[in-house]
Image 1: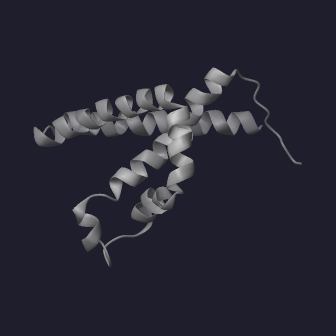
Image 2 (image 1 turned 180 degrees about the vertical axis):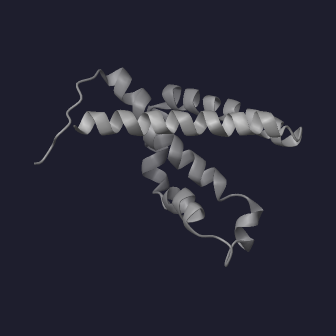
Image 3 (image 1 turned 180 degrees about the horizontal axis):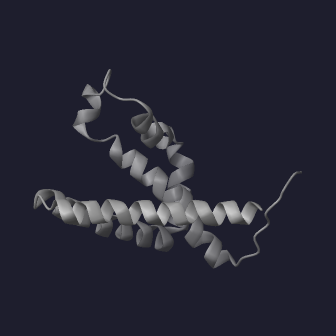
Length: 123
């Protein structure tokens, strides 16, 4: 079947990772499109918007079941996201360029480390 990387894990670890890597993205996408600004985006949006909103067209019955079946892990991830969004909000609201740049840099470094780890994993 072509599998190269097999991960052996527990059901609990699986559920926590799925809450982060899949379910949270679906929640964010669905919440993101609820901004009234979406009705005005035509002609202004490109890749970022399309990437963020693609999965908002999810099957609501299926995803409701999946979210509720994994609610503890998903609520944890939603709370983490809200906490980090509040850091960005505060820096922007306070016009704190230094803090905002630090937050953005921290995110970039974390993502670069993730990419590096994935690259090493494939070798």
